[in-house]
Image (cartoon, rainbow, N blue to C red; front, side):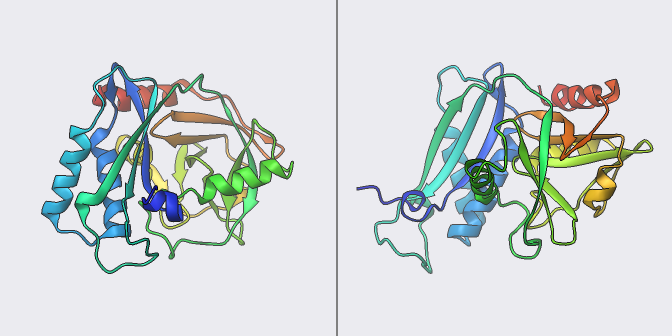
Length: 254
């Protein structure tokens, strides 16, 4: 009988990474995300316990050839089957690896979707499957085509993120992105872009976003993904400078 909390309650911690030349890119960042998530759900753990968990993840990395992408998932083996517990044993955290081909990168098509503002509810490092669930529901009810993704906005039309990536916008040669919080994941690629570029981190609304010159998404799996359109608004083709930005980030890692 399966007793891990992912199976029992849908509770797990995961990260999705890009692989090049059999190397997981930004591995230290991905492990840090996993540790923060594990500590949030099953901690608080001591720093030594988190160090041992990091070593456990590294020691279990498969030795075979990697495909384009890998998802690393942590779950907790919970024989007591309790929804809420006061103490967890870090030795019972289980690790799974899923390899998959990424396919070809394509320009994104987004459909705006209003959600509740969760900025003060979730920590910014917690990667949740709720966005995936909302996307599946919209697709199954035929309000979202297969080549579209959702762009989540608050009740006041503040732009948060897409269903699978952070969002950036360029207007008058200035680069913008929303601040992180419960509604905006503190993405690994987002952090890299902020280190490489001058970015204005501030709230902006959907109407303003649709007046921008160029919009792109970012995540650790795909890097920088140009946005083709949002609802019925189309955007310019990406410029060479943003291809160079992605290359600079990867070159530093590789």
